[in-house]
Amino acid sequence: MQIITPPNSVTFLRILLTPLFAFLFLENDFDSSFYALLTFIFAGITDWYDGWLARKWKYDSRFGNFFDPLADKILISTAFLLFSFKGYMPFWMTALIIFRDLLITFLRMISEYQSKPFNTSFFAKTKTALQMFSIYYVLCYHIISNSPNLNKYFTNYMNPFSPIILQSILFVVTIITAWTGFVYLSNNRNLIKSIFKNEK
Image (cartoon, rainbow, N blue to C red; front, side, top):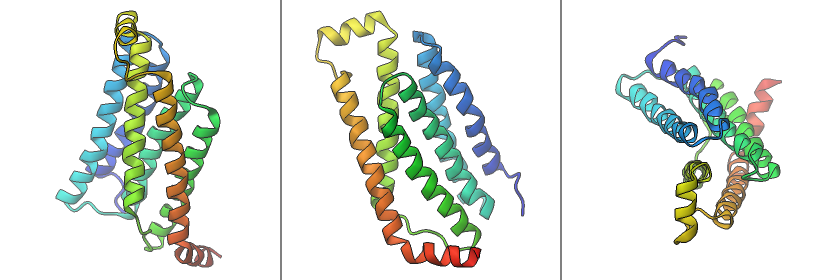
């Protein structure tokens, strides 16, 4: 099995970008907050690019099939942990999101290894899109919080970056994430049973 391929190298780059993103986010100044957003955007682009490389040049492997979503979960989970650390979202939301995502990722890794891919759903893809939207929203909120001029501007005029909107978005994302996890497990319950029968 070939592990070092161009798509997997790009995926590994996404993992390497995660601690850089965390460092910049925790610096707590406008420039670092802005660069944290740019780093996350670039990491998101690598997620699209490694998939494009794999499809374009047919670099399909079991390792790549579970390494790519694992890298995604590392990046996204880190973002939510940082948000809780900064007080932007309660820890119970972060814990629920990370538990759901890591559980499904773990089951998908085992199923891919056994050549029994999970059935994905439209709701799961919607969940991922909503998670990414919420992360970009919080990162913009973080930038504004670290810029007195921007903070003053949005406070004086119609403010799309208020604490109420922030908490509402994160609450909705948390509930949808938990719900899609339940749907995943329900729709693939027979597959999950067969996976663990093979493991024994």
